[in-house]
Length: 329
Length: 311
Figure 1 (tube, rainbow over the protein chains, first blue to last red):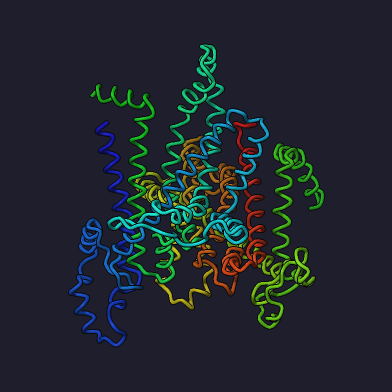
Figure 2 (spheres, rainbow over the protein chains, first blue to last red; figure 1 turned 180 degrees about the vertical axis):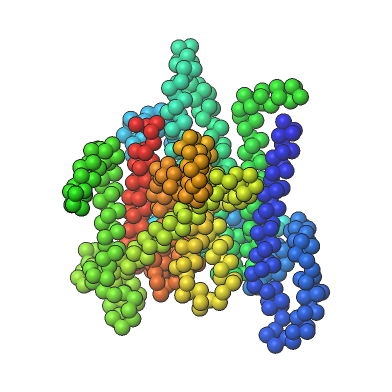
């Protein structure tokens, strides 16, 4: 078990270093940081002096080590666009994105899994067929289009919900939250549905196909023969055995939720890190792009690690295997 | 034998095949194929059948601006059946030209991804060793990130490397390259897997013994064995590529508004959505959704039809 975790940690560090190399190459080879710092008519000698002072003339490997060390301290320099520290810009906007992704994931899990269980248990019922058809359309609609259509219906025509911004927020320390004000919660509804809908359909289809397979197995028949209630069979036996793939997909999708938040944030003018990233792509603001990339890389690595550890919690066979293997050594 | 009888024979053979039978027997698939075909025809005949040339400023008149669709409002004008945008551009014609661009970018980026993926997959599988390890580790790292993020990153990179007015000129190629580069991994993995299976078979060994070069062996002998799965991935990727292009254009980092694809049209219309001019956004949106849905249905069918386990 410990050896397994250590090996996964090593792999995570390797992935992060690779992402760091990409970020560093962006810094090193795209655009010139000196241009962003000095005026147009600064003489070449002064530029060269600045270059030496900032260590830009050092060999690339040394600069890379320095870059990684700074990144580990959360320092990514100044934005080319606003001249603010990148770390502060990202930290200010991170709560907005995390709260949005969290709500979207919650929505996808709480609606998607029950829908999947239902359509898996009663595959021939007309509501299941309807849900299946709707989910196919859900997969084919791009996220931004779903957002626009929701805005059209609920903001423009019905005027029920706000169409942009975070509404009211409360600041606790450096964290700004939507959860403590009614207007803030209201503003979360449409963006969360938009962001979570694709994950919802994915989860529903996955749980459905897993349920269909599990319900055919002998131990379900045996559980029925033992006279267990439907509830105990459906949830205690069947659903439990569909959880391993569900956890994998949820984990991997959590990462893409944070990435697809870029699109949702643009549609709803949501002031998160995704919006910041789009602005920096448009202005080719390399420090912000590099920092965002490292941040997303870190999220992905952590999520993958947690997913791997969750397998042990959910699947007793894995625990047994690992224990035995460890015992044999 | 003349070309015509050869074609007739091929047609006869095709009509007898399993694939054709499975196609015919699925109503959804036939409808999806018909919709795909209609949209492609509409897009590529745009210069002939579109009622207006929406992006020629000479033909536009601001007095035609913001006309609603004819079937919904009596203010509509029959020469603009789906209404006009704020510049007086006909929405229907914009959709036709926009779909054409979306399809061109979609197909081209799938081809880029396919060529790149197949090439790297063949090299990786055939040569093995360090080459294989390097290519597959790059693939692993790239796979941790969603394709849209990779495409955004490549686009941002190119923007940093060239000036912005040059960028508008080559925007189409940048987008094709960015999407192509973000989808190659799946092809490479599939092809590599098949190469690993095929390369130890007797016919490949025989080809090697008679002195054929690795390139010839790969292209003539190994590649034909992977066309099925590659075709399935390509069809499913086409839908994804069209969505990715639309999303990038919607975000304002794709095609410029001088060459609007469906995504650009939706972005431009979105700015007017709050004031109630919904048709400028909704009609391109419906076209995009229909196109992607139809292509996805075709992809699903192809995957099942070519899967020997399900036969």
